[in-house]
Image (cartoon, rainbow, N blue to C red; front, side, top):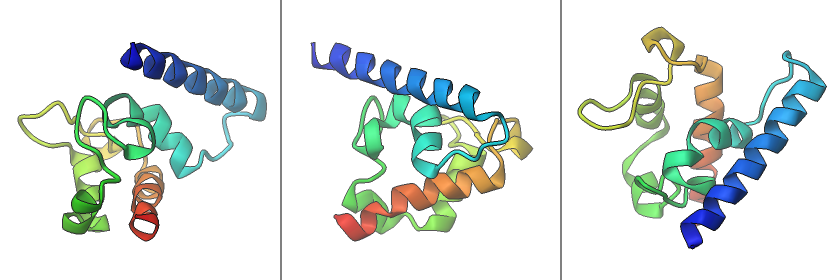
Length: 113
């Protein structure tokens, strides 16, 4: 039941983001939080709190993964896992700037944990 509620909430957030994107035009820059929601939350959970895979905003994860490592993992993916490459240079859909925005968003949890 809880997973169904989470899935419904995520769907609503995605629909609102898409509507916002359409209304403001394709040239609008999405925030790191928005990019995370659209590309990462499906597996890593809302705000990186965990889902079907690891929690990216977990203090232990953030303590062992610096910005450079997180950027590389996001861009290139993780071999032999479901984590695919998101970087455009590796066949994904995100620019280097978008990946940097996602990592900055996640790493902001270092100061709030």
